[in-house]
Length: 334
Image (cartoon, rainbow, N blue to C red; front, side):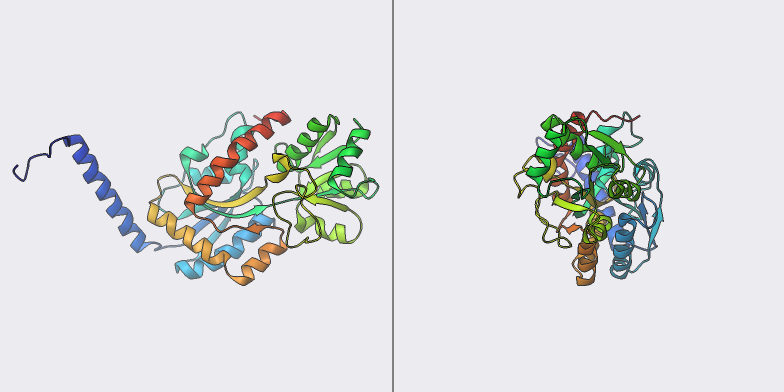
């Protein structure tokens, strides 16, 4: 066989594809070596001052030191995280635009909205699951329940009379409350608010009886006796509320009470793998620093040791659970 002949079984098309793949890999490697050569934009699809924004600024500062370039936080709030996430999905896949968002814009919105301007699995690359975000189930002090099982008995005994709050249709507080109402045949009333603060103010005032809330916002009211903590969602107790057991510990083992929302990093689809891995490595380094761990724990989040592969596995496992919860709740938005 001469030097220009093609090996038996190897088509000219396959050979060309192989050469193209090698060239693409080499290009990605060269990009990674020169990366980053300018500031990186971290889009937060929520307003400044919230937990997601605070976490982005903490991580951005730490990542900048490792990357040797500034990480600029760009808040693009609106439409339950859709506007900012869409901006990243349509950005150049060069590693200079990333999004730090919640599970709603990266996962659950696809089941909740009739139409999204982006497809997470097609238009974005999952990079790193930073932390899970368990919530605490709180009730007004007048509710004669101190545990999960006691609360279930209360909502059954008061069929049609109990109201629960959420900070948006399709958000976890709505889905978990809808699941409780459906499984207990309690016919509870869902009240959606334009934020967590007004929701808790009405709960403290007795206009609603229960709600799932973040530890960051609810803890001061729990300590002041204005709210009672029943239990927390997820598989582990919160470091900031160590004496509050999980609902699963109390026998409420339904998937709805065991899953949690999360905070994560994603990049435009097509970003070279070496660059994706570099960002994942820098996020991991940042989250392993003691001061970051203390700050995140105080916010009620549970840090994860993640990677692109681990994040994709979690996404694949949780997607059908969230799809079922949204379908059962009857929530649908245009």
